Structure formats: structure tokens, C-alpha cells
Image: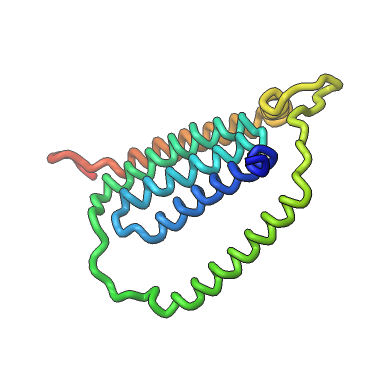
Length: 183
């Protein structure tokens, strides 16, 4: 129990990493596109948890809002728009890759065990979440906001206008003409 208390952050990291890897494997292995997209959502949420663990609360919030929210809605919208229900029966093309996957899993397991052994000998130092901005000590969120809206305001606005134009263009191109309307 003492080991778990002293290495709680490492244990949570390993659980979140396994959650992310499980979601990524699910994206590749699920045959239903909606199930694969939901597995990708699980992977996105695991990455947000890793950001929280690394004291990047702002990045975790952006990960949840932008990727888990916006991008996943876009993916699911495209899946429903294209009306893909299932993937047809195909010849198994992954069967010859099974030995390579087993060797890769063994190598990854050896690497993970080595990392756990190294972490058990010397715990990681706690990185400070504070940063200096113009001589004042501020947290991650304030530092990112300060740099984004002061130094990179013009590129930020240009990218937002570009994304708006791309969204309107996708809506116009994806719209089906009504009867009697010219395409």
C-alpha cells in the first residue's frame, strides 16, 4: 500500500496511458464506424486526463472542448452524412501481421516494465506549474492566454476566419439541391 501511495501519479499515468492505447486500438479494430469514433473519443478523454496529470489544465480543457467536443461531432456528422453503416466482409489482410504484432507487444511490455523499474528506484520531481510572464508569477492558463492574445492575436484571428470560411464552404458543397433548383 505504501508503494501505491508514494507512486500514485505514476499509477494514474499508467492507467490513463492504457486507456488511451485501448481507445486507439479500438479505433483500428472496430468494424462499425460509429464504434470506432466513440473509441477515438475515449482516447481523446484519456489524453485530456494526461494533460491534467501534467498540470496543463488549460490544454486539458481545450482537448475536451475542441477534440472530444467539436472534432468528434464533426466525425459523427460525416459518418451519418455518408450513411456508412457497416464495412463489408473483406479478406483478412491482417493475419500475416500477427507475429509482428506479438513481437511488438513483447518489446513494448519490456520497455514499460523497464520504465516502471526505473520509476520505482527514483520518483519523478514535481515540475512547477507556474511560469513567469513579464516578471509576474502566473499559472499555465494565464501564461498561455497572455501569450496567445498578446503576441499571437493576428494569427489567431486569421485562423479563426479561415476555419469559418472552410465551415461555410463545406456546408455549401455538402448541401443537396432541391427539386427545381439548379445545382
